[in-house]
Image (cartoon, rainbow, N blue to C red; front, side, top):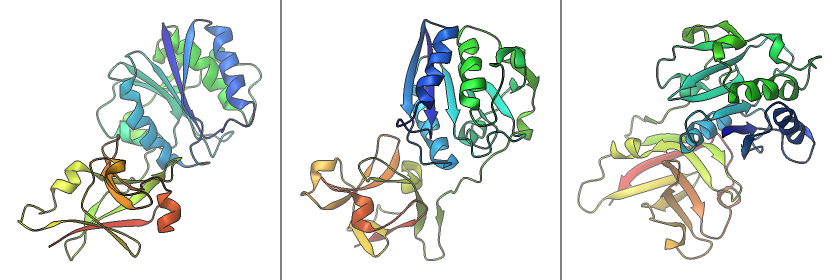
Length: 268
């Protein structure tokens, strides 16, 4: 069994995703195609980077992960493929795989430029159909990465500037909202390791999470630990701090957007 995952900003209102699947299955009828999501916000490379980084590890080894968030489709930007922990990744070289690239040394990376594995002709606007889909099918059938194109050094790959939490002069841990999910939960870039750096072991003190002009006292264990329509902070399934409203929409409640600041301190 060969598995191919798809992560895109295509949405599901149009035919694009279905056509990609048709191309894949025409070449590899036994492929199992899994949609991680097609609702990355348009052109949001950072959101896509966190999504694939948080998702890929739950799939079997040898899975081919296709990530297409491609603001410069049709330009001279590269398409790259590489393997990490026996998972194969195929994406534009625009930083969407930054978290994976920064995690470890990668020995085998190729610029996908062997047109023998593309559809003919290749359009300027739908590389998902004409390049990513057929190449992913060939990868799923065992074609080596290096056969698909020209070797590329890891140091030459494009990486995003990933915002990281930091401590302000007054000792607050400062992070940001990196995505807002379907339920309106605010997903931050603050993880458990970051929280452990805050001195909250003093008796009588606890965390205070500041979002805009609102304050949330302490962390909750689950979404239902507060009354309906009440805000809470929780460590979500990705391992990052999330700010939510029980049975409500935190983005609307706090009137915040992606990129807005979250501050954490300790109080008595």
